[in-house]
Length: 373
Image (cartoon, rainbow, N blue to C red):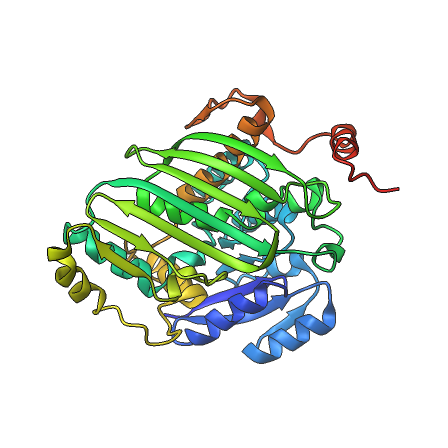
């Protein structure tokens, strides 16, 4: 069965389209929608789809089974809820909502509609995580102990020339939700859910409203301690993980957009067990960017879930909710100067939204010497 999809948004949506085209036996892209009519036509032609500029027309089309929301972040939640109300399954780029309360409302809308929502965390899909899972099944990892994460990217004025970027209203948040949300999903997958957060955030690189640097300390349910270093002021783009387990140390490469697709190193603490680790890792060779990787791997898992065959790599709506709750905890810790425990008390104001009022934004930016003249 081929699932009929409409892609909303031609920015990151172009990367999604590549994934769908790699899975032509499982998906048919029937509509591409973007307010830039030329871009919509260009992308639609690649898929043999219809181009349009009107989201309402897509939602009214009974032949569309899945709506893939690749719009600016402030539109993710309202368009996803409208799509669910129209009887569509939803694939939604990160962040799925602008608050914990919003993510909860999205989950309720999915339940009421009897449809599924799939948050986009394509970083999970790569041979390195397949090897890591195989080592865990073989009992060669042991308990997670400590980890370090780096999201060190380069974002300059040209990046922020897109009007909604760097704004609380349009981008929902800064580097925590626009960049590091992926690596935080990976650590939750590798080490288990985050239960405590201590955070310091700063806007140090560009004259924008939102944070572009962060230093985070995390504790997971398994008791592991993790540091996460985030900046958008590096000389290049690097995403890197170092994971210390009881029996094995794991280190990623530096690939920014797809860290699990590059070769990783797996080193036994007991050298006598290195051969066992190497034998398992060798079953997941570096054979190039095949259909099991990145967006194509993610979309294959979505198709499996819709076909009633979910696997251990599938991204669930609960995963998306957890990413939003972690972001809220990070902002809450930074603003209060306190360690924050998860899950969050839904009565906390931060759960209703972490976007500060404009007067607060101006005050903070002026205090950092970043106010526009």
